[in-house]
Amino acid sequence: GAGVSQSPSNKVTEKGKDVELRCDPISGHTALYWYRQSLGQGLEFLIYFQGNSAPDKSGLPSDRFSAERTGGSVSTLTIQRTQQEDSAVYLCASSLTGMRVNTGELFFGEGSRLTVL
Amino acid sequence: GESVGLHLPTLSVQEGDNSIINCAYSNSASDYFIWYKQESGKGPQFIIDIRSNMDKRQGQRVTVLLNKTVKHLSLQIAATQPGDSAVYFCAENIVWGNTPLVFGKGTRLSVIA
Figure 1: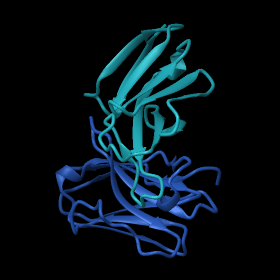
Figure 2: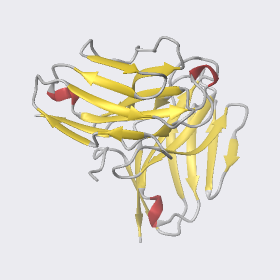
Figure 3: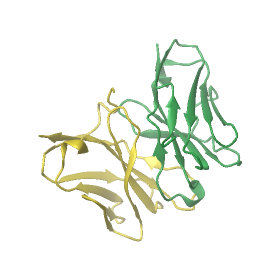
């Protein structure tokens, strides 16, 4: 595809349920990022994948959050036992280079809007 | 789609006028800065970047100014158009720092036709 693809675009769930959000980065991009955007806030870094290296999980807000990236391509962000404060837009981005040479742009998907009732 | 950032600072500009969006960054060690534009219901899009060895960089209708002394970044948009209406974020980072981009909270630009 031409850009970063995310699914679902909208997800409404009940408190306590698990959710999975998917990101399909641009082909050939080795770096993949997850950010969270709450209403009225900037983008909050969650997790970063670079090639086959261990992911940088320093931004994950709690152990209910996890992510994996299979085959160096598609990534899934999982939120277990969702809480109302998890409601936000979850944005995925990819880039050609990773954080070690952190120039150049991140290409963002359109996000997955999560609403926890 | 639904807008993000309903409580963001807002700048209203008449169509055709120039816009100036300001950003104060936090880390004096940051040496790379980017401006992103986010339209309603979409992900942020890269506009322009600047390294700390420069104090000004120009693109098409946009100029970024960097003042490292006061840790201030601005984005100037010439001849603002309705299509410029969006939320604008600055982001900072350290090249070779192995840290993710840190984004500011954003400013909403509304263009009055």
